[in-house]
View 1 (cartoon, one colour):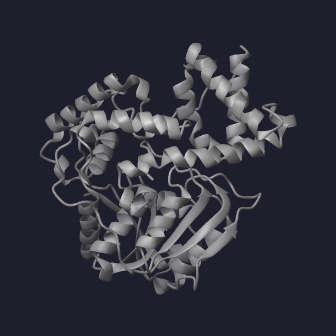
View 2: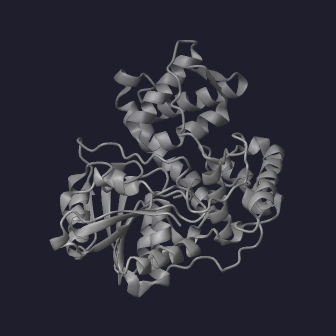
View 3: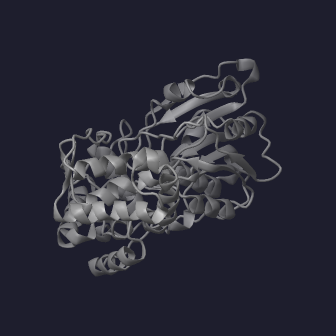
Length: 426
């Protein structure tokens, strides 16, 4: 395992170590101390050694390999390509077994939590503190379950539902996209003079769906990229959670449909084959997935009816359908270890309901919710003073808020962004 460290800025005030995890799964963390050094308040840097590490299977920690092509690295696929999706899922699983079959069974969240405790021992610490983001909340929660007496000050930022790891965490994107879309349509209708997408929520919604139907017949070219209806739904689902971004991009789609020049779509972060391999190793190895392809076909068809924005994507088949049975039971989180959960109300990757479920599972936790907060990631990501100060106070003093806290999103808040080479499962 590769680890890194920046020592506490003020040795006289040092409290301990702060292990850092970037999410993923599959995200490398070796450089996190240097990245977080620029973001964390001085009071936190004074008190902690910042510890980064590449989780097992990632980067410089004996990476798992599947030798995937760029097309094979694409994770989510519409149900209309079901037969091809089955071939893709089986191919990825077969290639991973062929290239790393002896290593893959051990790339799991529970084993990464064990690695964290080895790091604690090597550093000579009685306990560790930890701010985990996105998938990092799952890793942190599992650590509290396995090593409760070694847990010091844990912050779980943008939290998953521990009972949904992992197929359920993808499936939750279907139903949660619907209220986000309704909120977006209302917001956009109130600004019809700016975006020209409709004067009522119904008109705005019809504008979007007419673009989807049009693209299914004749793809809409954005920049130089043609998008069909399914690709538009995939592209727009997370954008609807940040209303201004969603309105901007539907307006661009409308211009593209009219044949007007449009900007290029933002390019996603460059994928890394080892990161995607580690991602599948973790999500397929943490719990048993259905092995009958037809189960995915039926679930996708039902979700497409119930949740039209993203439903058929959410229940689609993955390589986990052809993965070997996990070596350990599914992760269980159910304890009273004190932790702090921080969450935006409108988070596209870890919706509010999943953080609330984490709060229920961690019975000793307190939760900070940013009312009307948008985006994925809160602490040091959005600039919300209320949430940042309450989180910093906990890391500095070790005292949780006496009750759950609701912060208000302010006009000065930035959109939360966490950039990884891999999707955040949350």
